[in-house]
Figure 1 (cartoon, rainbow over the protein chains, first blue to last red):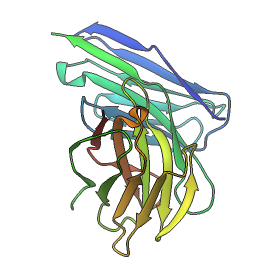
Figure 2 (figure 1 turned 135 degrees about the horizontal axis):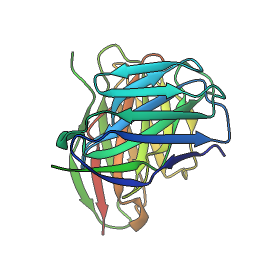
Figure 3 (figure 1 turned 45 degrees about the vertical axis):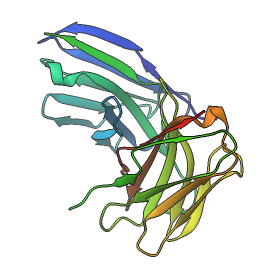
Figure 4 (figure 1 turned 180 degrees about the horizontal axis):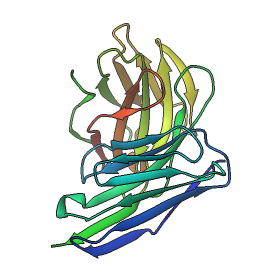
Length: 114
Length: 110
């Protein structure tokens, strides 16, 4: 079945540093989603990408939809302690209906040292 | 606008018992999807409901079942609980495309 591979698995950085993580797939996705999950909470949608090559920003976060449609990148600039959490990439696969089931990567755990 | 809500927050059950988890979708969203998230892993798709009908199912046994009501809220039922069913159960609601998650129900099976 379809799988999403995220790297790195974890990161431990100093406050103020920039962060980069990526997600790759063996299959094409037409949408890429990036979520952040805090401990004991549900994932919160950060950025949605809908077109190959698209570059989208949300504050200090920037994500890109790869040209091949098989990868995506998330960058966080000038990290702060509240950026701590697990970041997931996800892509929908479609059957009938309007909303696909989401396939998630394994997550990248980010820790920020003040 | 009210987001996705789930109840209960936490639940402890014994192996073999049955459990019902509830989800209220975000206002205007007609699709609810359920996911199981084991510790240290990404969410795994269980099934999806669209306008009260099941609309896709993941690799979960029949003892996982669900319902969607006319107001688009939803239930997840799990029969004959097993220890491996211990996980965070997430529901997500959507209209088209992006899915918005609730806070989850933490189920512990002993």
